[in-house]
Amino acid sequence: MSVTLLLCEGESQSFDVRLLGPILRGVVGEIRPSGGKDGFPNLVKNHRRAMQSVCGICDGDFPRKPHEWRPDAIAQPWTDTRQGTTVQLGWRWRRKEIENYLLDPDVLAHTYAWSLEKRAVYETHLNRVLDALGPPTAARAALTACAPRRVRVDTSVDVRQTQDELERELRTKAADHNSGASIDSNMLVATFQSLVGECDPGGRLRADGLAFFAGKNIAALLTCQPGIQQLQRSLKNIDDVGDDVIDALNQDSTPHAWLPEWQAIRAAVDAWAP
Image 1 (cartoon, rainbow, N blue to C red):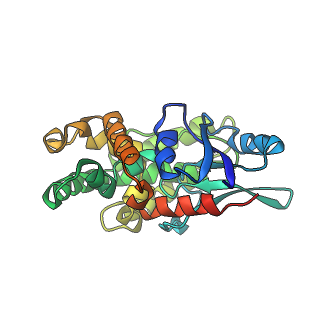
Image 2: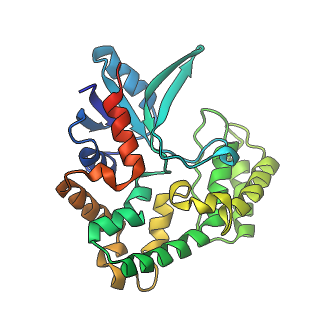
Image 3: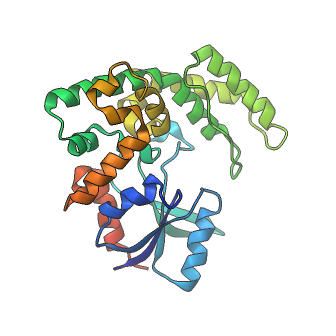
């Protein structure tokens, strides 16, 4: 096996490590959770000093340049550049976070053996949620785009706010944050306004909302959808959904075949050489 140790975000029982287990079955030695994002690049580098065949996989997160973001199922290298030297640390998930995969219609149809009719009902619920998440997603993406380099900014917002309320919250966040590092309030709001159209129904980013939007936000609204429990009882709780998905993946001989991105990440890990 080329990768003897693969580090991922999350804790020991988080869905990150539990999802990677079946997807990468047979092509990686050990998969180990690393905890949070802070220090993750250095953790990979430090492990490599003792063991060369160490890589990491991290969440896609909101991009620094959202207007340039494009969906792609090809495994995306995760790199670190210091003093003019670029090192590949591993790979990034293409989607915002692990919950985005757990709520994918293809994944749930596999997990619950849904009929086409049941899948269509689920997609109606999901699209309703994605339509509602346009403005808050634009706000969160704008905060990431305008945050100072190497400074963590809290991008959480109340997803039930109106566009005007979100704009006021962004100005407040910028003012509060400027005691430590500068965020241009006017640029932040302008970026937000430019992204709303892309995140709203008919927009470029909305078209790939299950990849670009935050999976935790999707889950928070989806579990509250009227009638969602009648469709599938587990959909009232994202933890129950995740447990069901992991169980189904573990029982499948080729779970990586469920999604093109899972096939791509498996092939990339299998082909990696130190």
